[in-house]
Length: 367
Image (cartoon, rainbow, N blue to C red; front, side, top):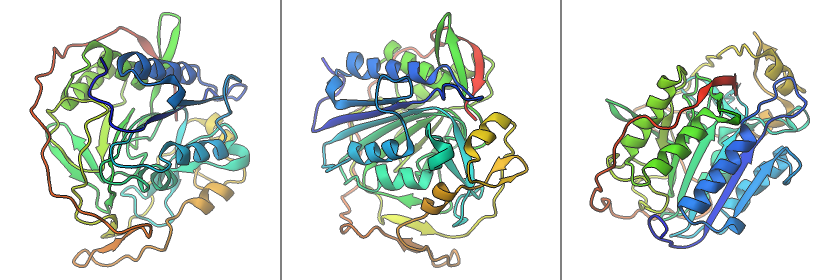
């Protein structure tokens, strides 16, 4: 029987890019996509016809910038309460200076399409507007991003900090839908390729899939702990991260079908202050060369490109005021319906937590 229950539409978009023929070629991103597809089909019993793949191995449509953005919109098209969506990206990640200065490090996180030199990068603002903004209360989106600098790759307002609790962004971008992002590292870190014998895969994706297969009823805290244990056991510096659209008790079981109704009093970006850019200078010269088409480089770091920079914006200008009077920027599409705060059902005790599945050390980084 499927884990959880089937409510409405179930649809997934899985993207894996190995950048064949480039100087920053990866080996594990396409295997990641097929690993994640098997998890959805075999463990969660999703229909393979509802899972769209974009890879650069010639077996699917190419993961160009146009196709990625188009299929992001396809994924959540006509979203209704009860619908369940899943998004997975495995490939290179980078950063650009945030022209609105709203990110706490002053940088937008980006993903790198296969045609980045011609078409540009895809920023976290664009991802948020395509995947998160359209969701109504009662719809669920789960995302796994296995790339460098992916910690806030969807600009979600809350991050779980082990031992501390939930942290809200200084300029939180609230939405109606129930969205969760498991990322391979925080914004300042890199994600690694890994291997199990001759099998390639990203460290984050491999650990995530193995953890769910070993214990499908693992709690959120148990899942994060297992991912962290696996990274440390393989001597990797990256630390997986959970960010969400709203807070919840993390001792409840993880699954794809539990949906929290909207608990946010206001929807849109609440602006308290602006930040100067704090670039992390990339040591990957090959990746800088790959993404530098039409872009300027400062200290070896890509800071913008003709297309990515032009689209790195919100639907309307954001007004910045002092903290005592925060400004709420709300989407234009429809009024906000605020539902009463609810609590999830009974907590299911999770299974054993120990280390799982052996893999080789990282073979390359997804800068």
